[in-house]
Length: 334
Image 1 (cartoon, rainbow, N blue to C red):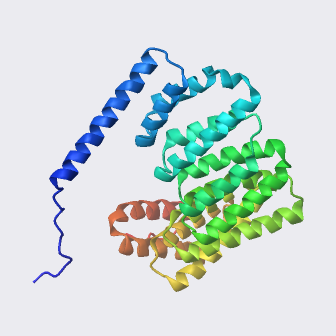
Image 2: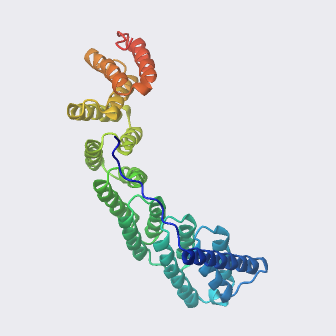
Image 3: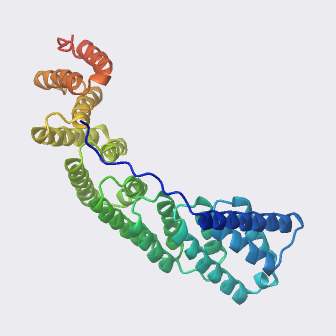
């Protein structure tokens, strides 16, 4: 006998609920027709602006309406007066906060907010950054919020010490990754910041920063070995090294870290794949640097992968054959 959660049938809406839904749809269609009619007639008044607000509160994905709204605002007499424009755009930001609460992932809303902030005579970028902090706190993986954050940071650097802003933002990504190591947006933001930080660092600071990056990556890998974000960041970190000597040093550290991880989780697919890839990369960067024992370890790892990830067995067989020919060792996967 099968035991499972009983499927609950969807509740049939009442006639009153059906009537209310129909009336709401009719009101939406009427409002949409009205706004499109005003746009077609090139009406740029406060009444038209209010109509677009009502429509966008119901549907944030109408990019044509967002464009129309921007045009209306720029054609109003208040736009030419700096104080009135400031007041108008501050009200617009308040309206957008209501939209954010209803649909935080609306691309067109974020695009409009960027425009509004850019048009403000006296923008408050620090205040806007505090807002984004709260939004990311609500949804740490929201791509749109992170993209908007990069926009705010770029503008903030125009008004403050850019290097100091970078360091603060770098610390913010650290906190977000420590909170959730699978946060792709935080890793991505970090990769945008690190090159500039390394470029202005002297050698002792550079080595300290890279050591910290290694520790952050290893903590993330130990937390979730199968999550790809830390592994991808590790590969990217390898690519930006200044010399092959630095890359080899980083590779050796990565191999040691993977070995430690495999002592705890010997059949982890991603760590096993990474170990093979790092041995192959090490051999490419420094021919002859992979010892016979390490070559055997690599070949045995490929055999293990065929067992734990049979779906990709053919791929591991091909890799094993290629490495056995390159290293002139026995192919253990045959």
